[in-house]
Image 1 (tube, rainbow, N blue to C red):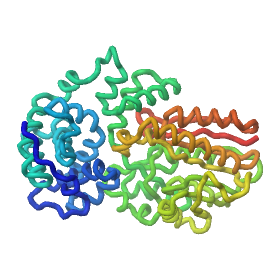
Image 2 (image 1 turned 30 degrees about the horizontal axis):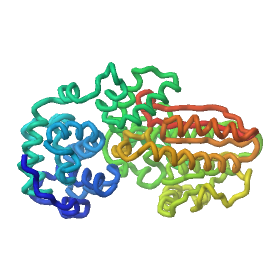
Image 3 (image 1 turned 135 degrees about the horizontal axis):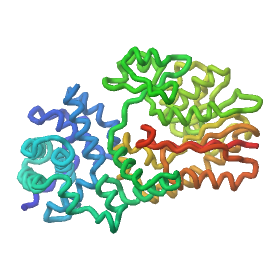
Length: 456
């Protein structure tokens, strides 16, 4: 196959560029998102709404574009392996804009119910109209090779042997980096779960999460969300799933009295709020509050009890998001922009402290399609050091008898049990009172972790 003429990535379709009227709008929107993720470091869930608006997509067309973009990003590792088997050159020698279009074509062929002729033809048109006319023949030849087999046949041909390398096989089949699969398998084992849980968890990571709403107590209730079409989950007393539609169309969400919040995020926040205390219960702290979902729920609960919440956030733009989230609560919440590792308050100031620590986010892969391909083991080492420092601050900030909730949206042991065990070892006046690990395939939530620690 002749190599297409090279073209700078910056000339490909990008967010902000006017759509090509000749291109299929749904596929053009999906291409813009995928290219923005890979070329510009964008986040899929941030780039998608803008692309859908730019192309005027709603209903089934919007759903198609969403699945095409998110599914392509999510399963990139598997699709790249298939493409590599169909090329006469290393994958890195394919121009990035062309490669992104090919990935979209592979997802239609192997991951969606799109007829092969339509998947190939529309992708070739996309390359011709949105990327580079001279690359259309190259794309056609590659995708016809991909279309010669279905997904099962490609897996049988390319995946590591399941008996000899079960984790490598699982990583290939479910499109996760192997180091991530190894870390998740270790966490499942520590949680007392069997081998069958791994495949279920990885498949859950590849299933888009439902839209879950939270009725912020004192501002909204579940009945109002149900009247707007949501369905109570029966687990969090404030959670309801929105089966379809735009959450912004729900009046309580639009007015800030309710919000979009995974039920796991609600449950770990409630674990702190419901922990028993002796004596004073009037000063609460959210140490890493951005973007504000947990702060809004925690602040609403504090308001009902006559307590006050300090919401601390390092980055000013995220602090602004927190301010927006808690605005309906009035002056119950004070938002502070500062470094959580260098607190400006005195030790022992607070009765309850929430530390939603920066982490790899490997428990929220249902929502963050690109995260699995961006994180590395080196990131883990840096994050653990930060988590340890922040947990020390959280424990120093709580009074004797007070409670700290250490929370991550990652089940990886280095970020969860190991960090907590280290803190208990460092502090002779800290006791671990309880731990809960949530799982997408078991609880229907992100894989949130929460440990409750009490100063004694």
